[in-house]
Image 1 (tube, rainbow, N blue to C red):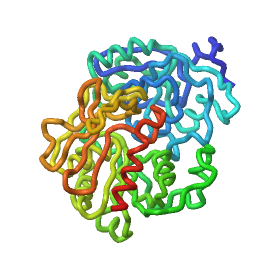
Image 2 (cartoon, rainbow, N blue to C red; image 1 turned 120 degrees about the horizontal axis):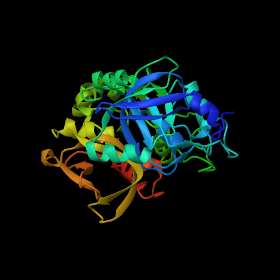
Image 3 (cartoon, helix red, strand yellow; image 1 turned 30 degrees about the horizontal axis):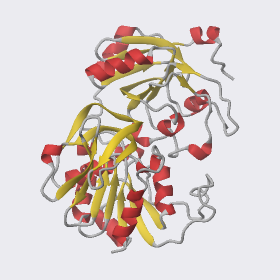
Length: 384
């Protein structure tokens, strides 16, 4: 086991993070001995590193944890949000030994098993402050045992194409359709329900990087879910005769996922639709809105969002680098939620068709149950 206090071992595993603006932050490798490029973001959550690491929406990114002590409760299979780790790298201040009765593996072991480079020992406060001031930056994480100069690392960060105009949804999506949790074991695995509700609706969920807890929440509302790959056509979805369609979360630039936008255009008005995160952006684009890049994104589990219909403020979990431009909202849509930190759009509803979407993650239990009504709203919408 790698102990956090093994200073000799840490000194022998030197690593550095090189940013496109010429900044270099030095530390030690705690993950896979590989080098990768990535978009550097920060997450303000004090806990939940396993859910963050296994969220496909982080594909292409280096995630910096602002909380300084990470790894203390280890890793376990039940808390995974997808089939593997999809992020490009992990950045923390200090790694702790696993000490929890539910732990099955250490953080370091899981990072190595998934070929994810990670660095510890650097000043994550300095890095977070920089990202807030300058905006998201491209980076190069050198954790391999090969010799590389810091100047070469900076050059590689600059040369990388980044995530703008890149379709990452097709990279993280499933490759063939599947039926979610047919025996109910995955949904009931946390003891959240002694028995699952009977199936009332059959829905199709697009996998642009879908999180498993979204699928759990849908099943707990009496929905039987068939998950389909990102590039599935609207026609193929309709042949499954769903009562509703779900547009999932996912990584990178929504404007690059043109096949999903086209599917949204065809499906709106033909079947009830709900969307989350990337799904919100894709459905808004399908209706004629535009998206834009946020300065440093929204990544954390403490973002206040106002429900404009009720006036209630929800504490939300968020993970996105793009948003829907409020001044481009078409007449067919109305804004239903706004972010109280920066007044960006956090939800939309179609005025004449059964479709709504939110930018945040209601399945992530940040409130802990503030936004669960959204899944119930989807259910009611299909019951009309």
